[in-house]
Structure formats: C-alpha cells, structure tokens
Image 1: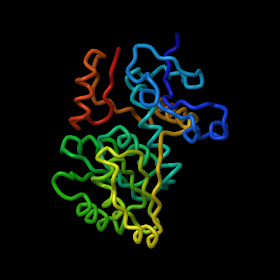
Image 2: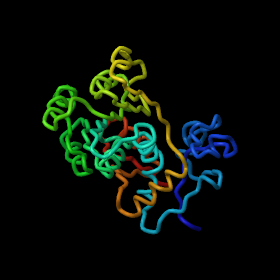
Image 3: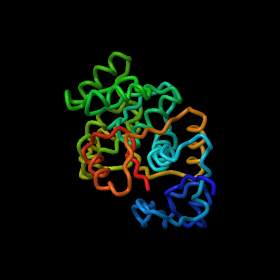
Length: 264
C-alpha cells in the first residue's frame, strides 16, 4: 500500500556492470516504455529492485517527473563531465526535462549556467530555476550571444556543454567549448547526422561523452535531494490517460517547460 517511485531502467542485476554500480552498461539494459512495454499502462510489473519508496511530502506528479530526466542529467554533469564549482556550463534547450534538471544541479554546486530557450516565457522560467544567462536562440544565433556573455565574465569558452538537441546545435556546441572542455550528449532530437572537425577535438583536448540514464544509487540521492528541497520537480502540465494524444501533441509543439504528466 505504500506510494512508490519506479526506476525505469531495467537490467539483469547479476552482471559486472550491475554489481559494480552502473547498471546502464549492462548488456540487457532497457527502459520502461522504450525497450519494453509499460510507459503508458494502467498497471506495470517491474523487478522489486526498481521500486523506491516515495517520501511522504512528495506528490505523485512530482515523483513521475523525476526518474528519467533527473537521473540522466545527474550522470551527464557529475559522472561524465565531472562539472566543478565555478565552471561555466552551457545547457541546450533549457525547457526540456533533462535541461530543467541540469540547470538546478549545476547551480546547486556553484557553476555558472548558460542556457538556450525558444521563447521569453521560457527564459523567465529558466532564470527562476537558477540560470545565470539565458539565450533566446530564435532571436539571435546562440553562439554569437554566448561570445558576448563569455567576454563579460572573462571566459573564452564553456567548460561543459550539455547537448541533447543533436544536429541543429552540435557543431556550434563543440565550437563553444574552452580548451579541455567536455561535451555530453544523451539524445538527438533534431537529428543524429552531425559533422565534427577532428582538428578542433584533438588540438583543444576536447572530450565528447555519450550518456544514457544512470545508476539506481544515484536515483536514490536525487529523490532525497528533492525531498530536502535542494532540487525540485518541474511539471509543465497534467493530462488524463484518455487525452494521451493531446499530451504527446503538446510535447511535439515544443511549448512545454518541464515534464508533461499523464495520469490514470
């Protein structure tokens, strides 16, 4: 009868990757609703190790907004990019689920956060989450705006870039990095066919890192941080199950800021 949160990452639980604490490297790893059914079901069966007790002060809506985007953002920032206090972090598509989590997490440790958004209302919401600088990419090329921001703060490039947009932004994201910078990607929503100038990569000692989800242990940390008020779930809107097409249409419209929740 307890309220719970589901870790949507399913793995074998027996291999070296699972037992070593990073189950996304399991060869049997999958995600509910993607590699197996369950993302929009009335009832779902999962391994008991994927069940996390939901803190008493956390709503079901907030809990539903956390697992995939917050766990992904945590892994990208802290395990892959190893973001440090004082570094400059560019987060593409600041209204997306991963990015609203990444903005909060980067600010939580004292990084300077620059993010891109498509509208003034999203810009205000990104600033409210803690973004130091917000670029309206539809008004001006984001890289030109970024150069102005970096000059003001005495930097020549970003230390870390979080980019899950892909084809539309990838080349300029690479060019935005400082020497020794790290780019982490977890998606390709605008397309996966990108061009990379290898001379820039090796001469500037740039790292390009892929990332999918994260460990069960880190999801427990995230739930605790949310229950402590150090991070917050960002829910854009809530739809009943019989309006699932409308919910998906809202996502596709790119108007959402944060997660779109479907309830039974």
